[in-house]
Amino acid sequence: MIDEDRKQRLLAAMAEAGIDMLLVYGNAWQGDYLRYATDFSALEGQALALVRSDGHITLYLDSPLEVDRAEIDCPDLEVVYAPNLVADVDGALDRFRNQRIGSAPGRLIPRRLAARAKDLNLADQTAFLDRLLMHKLDSEIAAMRRAAKLADDGYAVFRQAARVGRADYELIAEIEAFFRAHGVDHNFQIIGVGGQEVRGMAPPSGKKLKRGDMVTTELTPRVDGYYAQICRTLVVGEANAEQRKAHALWLESMEAGIAVVRDGVTAADIARAENDVFRAHGLGEYTTSEYTRVRGHGLGLFVDTKPHILEDVTTRIDAGMTLIVHPNTYHPVVGYMVLGDSLVVTRDGCEVVTATPRELFRVPV
Figure 1: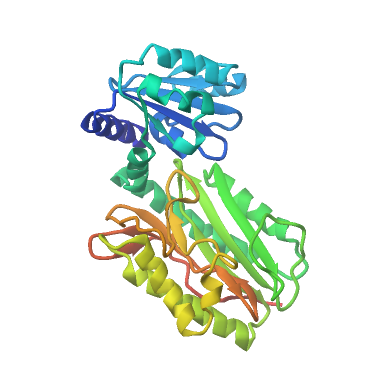
Figure 2: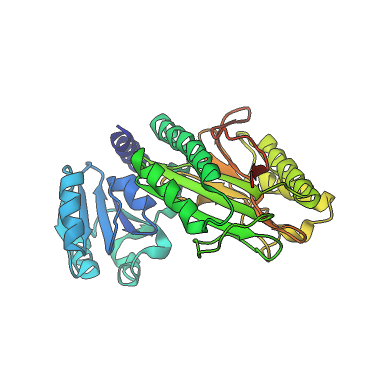
């Protein structure tokens, strides 16, 4: 099982690093560190877990409903209802002050606990857990492949749902129904509908599709805790010459980035390959933070995990990492456009795990 694989890997890594205990935080949005260590994801409230080197895990939750769920879903954990979460964990840590304790993620550890770092022998071990999160086990990659297959299937449903007069939320409702019927417990999805005025993607707002609109989306279904993502653009009716020209540029950029991916390059190398295509076409300013956020990112237990694919991120890319490469940004003539595929890094390149054609799709009208 994936959770047991992760636990054994975590305990072995703790032993190698000389860590006696890990303090791990999670909430409903940022739950990947907690999920890795405990196989539990909080749906409400906050959670802190103490992972001991002998494999014993105590999970502290400040929601009684979450306690009930954790006791059912994770019977191997010691689950503690802690309405005064930080104070209760602070007291528990006092009993282990002579041990070497790590914490992650550092930016989310409650201030009261972080302030006692010296007293508790508490060290920030975010980078330690990041390495485990980024470098996937075979069972983790298998889950991502299953999610990628459903992402492809989901986009086929999305294309069928798109037609003149339908609201953007109706498209997403069909996707959600499809995913839930196929065992997907969460899907992160945003959408854009329109033309030059569209500067990005967002949750649905009720905008109705009309002839000539570009419809952009990214679908990110989760299977067994692991996300895969696909980004595609379609046009309602026939694409015009500028839309086709823009899509050809996006395709060239994405494929340039994917061609660079292999064991030993950096995130910056991938981003630079994508951005150089835009610069060659005189659109370099649209690779900046004014118009775009990242040129891709890691995938795993979080929808947008490390490493972020940017020219100033020097994280080494290793075999076994899982990424999406997507030159998603604004075009000054046609508006926001997206194109992206999920992949697994290999020694000599990568395996692209999403299979939807890299087309500018057309919706008949």
